[in-house]
Every structure is written in C-alpha cells, then in structure tokens.
Length: 501
Image (cartoon, rainbow, N blue to C red; front, side, top):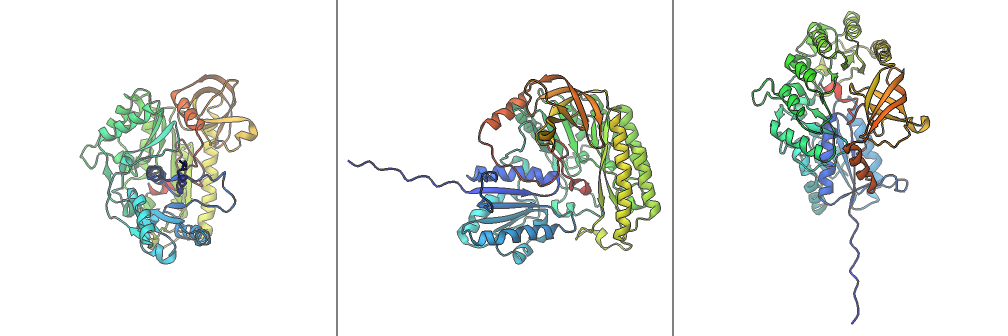
C-alpha cells in the first residue's frame, strides 16, 4: 500500500494597513487589523520582505483634514499601481474619512482600487475584499450612519501595555474649519457599562494605561441625557484594580465643566495631563471658527485646573492664519499662550479643508504672512515649554517605560518613558532589565524644550504590563500598523488630530 502525502496548505494572504490622521483612525486601524486576522489574513513582514515587495492586501485608512490629503492618497496609490498590475490577486482598499467624502470618485481616479469603504462600516472590509475578488470588480460601500460601534469589532492592538478605548464617535459641533462631523456623523455614545467592561478586559490582558477617546470626549453622555456622565466615567475608572493610568483626548473648552476637574483631582489613576484645544486666542477668530467659548472662559478653565491639580501639564492645538485673522488677532493668541504656560502645543498653519465653510470665507491670509506668524508662535511655544520643563529638574518622577518613543535611544544608550503628566523622559538604562510597560522612578537632571533627561534611576518596578509585552515579543514579531508620523504618547496621538477638535 502506497502512502500518500497531503498537499501543503496554501500560505495565508498577507495584509498591511497604512494609517493617516487622528487618534480615531489609529483606533479604527486596530479594528481593521483585527478583522483581517480574524478572517485568516497574516501581517505582512516588511522587514523580511525583498525590496519592492508588497502585501497581498494593502489598506489605506485615510484622513480628510488636510488640504492635500487627496493628493497624498493618489500619490501613494499610483506608486502601487504598477506593482498591482504585475501581481494578479493583489488588492487595494481605501477607507476612512477621505473615502467617506470622495466615495466613488476614488475608483474613477484610481480604477485599480478594489474596495472603498467609509467611516461607518469598517466591519465590512473582509466581506468587501472577498466580493471584489469573486466578482472581479470594485466594491464601493459607504454608509450614512454607524453600522456597528467599532469597539465591538475584533481588535489587534499596537501596544501590550496601553490601549485606546473609544467612548463615543462623531461630533455635534460645527467648527467652520473642520470636516469631521460631516464624515463621522452626529455623536453616538457607548453605554458606560460597555466601556468599563472593555477596560476590565484590557486590564486582565496586562494593559495598565488606557486613553479614553472621543471626537469631543467631555461631551460624553449627551446622547443619553447625563451631563455629568464623563466625570462619572473617570471616577469609575478609579475603581478598576490594576488600572494604573487613565488619560483622555480631546475635550472641548465649551463643555469643560468643574465636575470633570474635580474627578481628575480626586481620582488617583487619572493622570495630571490635559490636552485642551485653544485654536485661537482672538475672540473674533473664535467666533468665526464657531468655537462656542471665548479666551476669558478658556483661561478660567486653565486657572481652575491648575488650582485643583498644581502639577498638571496642559497641552493644546493652535491654528495660525485662519481667514480674516489680523495682526491684532494674532497678538491675542500670543497673549493667551503666554498666560496659559502650555507644556507643549500642536501648531498648524491654516490650510483649506475642502467641504468646510472656512474654505470659502473671504480674507484668506497670504501664505507668507501665515508662515511669519507661525514662526513667531513656535518660538514662543518652545520658549515656554522649555521654561516649564526646567521646573522638573531635580524632581523624582515615576515613568512608564515606553516602546519606540526615543528615536536616539540606541545611540545614547538610554531608554524612554512617560511621566504621569505625559512628558517624555529619556533615562539612563538601569543595571536590571526593564521592559516596556514596567515602571521606573528617576531623578530628572536636564530639560530640553520637548523632553527631559534623567541620569539616575532610583528604582524599578516590574509590572504585569511588562510581562504582557514580554509574552507578546517572545512570539514571532508581527508587522504593526504603519503610522508614518511622530509619536506623542502611549498610545500615540497623531499631530493631525488636534485640528479636528
């Protein structure tokens, strides 16, 4: 009797997700990778690939905030076109905000794209890919309202020790520079019990830091009529054993209430860091932006936060050169920045966002004027940030060891971590092994405008999060979500995001 050999199993199709834009897109990309792996796809190993090789499925999760977002997308797509033509079976999918906005025009301009899906139906991606393969024609599916809340979908998180937790999607504001409400829809809130259940599950897996995420995070509860729902949620996070750090982004000054300040001050694991977009210090420009607060209210919030949480580090977003901005308006922005003493700021030169009211406003500021004002603002922001950082020299801080945040760590033989107030600290490697997710206590010895340095490690605390990171990295390392942007925290907010708040 002759033995037969079973035919070898075909290798799974590989995928790569390319993510652009805000924190919500990063959150969605973690769901997209989870969906693809749940459907049997394998991550594409970029490090082990030959030059010019590509994944079987390339997914672009796009952003529509920037004026040239479409040019960037089509440039990337055109680069893949000849590769796809030479590789039968390769597929390209485009999702996210630009897909929601441009819809079928994507396949008109790039007919080799196989799937176009929107912000409301990311869960459809595997089915659409299979349908496009079987029917041999492009599949375009854009829903006008949320199909499934993204947090209920399978997830492959970037970090073993820190996680995004979405508490709402969409936005009810009408800022004239922002297209997000048109693409993400009206605010929809998750139930508190679902959010807390997800956090507990994450902690059970080894996560010790969560960032609560929403387009307008402190408006949480508007859908079910509880104006204090967000502060209650922060306090409830304080009762979750094993959850060491809670952050949130991004709140809106118009809805920032004192009960949130009290919850931050009284809940030990809610970190003393606050990212609150200013956008402009001029009341006239704020009115033109339809930002429903004025500089006095904004500065009042800053004052009350610092009174309740003296060690709080406050960061912000500012747009320079909004249509109609005068030199007097810009001087008001400089004044508010000087009074606020931000530890850092995301600064943007205004650019037209197609589809927003501001794109058609008169009195567009000349580019050379915008550039000059931008330079002066950056100089002031850096001067203040450096002065604020110098106050930390000599202090002892407990850091969560981070992965991939110190670009020069290999050269300087240092490691990097985040302080409770989210400042980035580069520290000398201790004698004992430390892993991302572990906690180290250090003494700060030097301050730069954008980071601190610690040449003395006081103590090391190994954590369950470090164990989780070690367990993940002991297995073959999967290719992660390619963000292509500098990191800000863990999980890492992206620079494009703040201008949408």
